[in-house]
Image 1 (tube, one colour):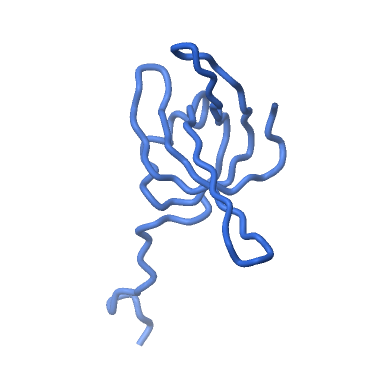
Image 2 (cartoon, one colour):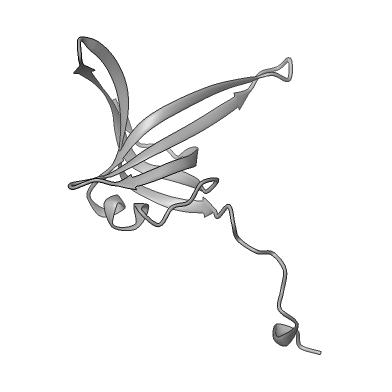
Amino acid sequence: MFINDAKYIKVWEVEQKENYVKGNLGESEKNTDGTYNNWFWTAKFVGKSKETAIELQKGDTIEIKGGKVRKFKYNDKWYDELIIFEYEIMNRANQSTSQDDDDLPF
């Protein structure tokens, strides 16, 4: 299944591999009763996305611009995997919102 529409997802961990960057990602959806459904994904950042994915940090939110979901078999068990071709950083976890006094106009 290919992902064509925007999909927002939270980064939990990234790790450099030989030919790709591995990521542990998560997403949530709020139910009408106030509870949440949570999903966790093992992802591979490949192609253009591999170049910058290693700089992602825990808590960053990304928008997946292109990717696909596939199943693979490992030790007689089937797993889902998210392959990400292109993404955009929507929110940095450690981004400071305070301004330095030297940057103020007065």
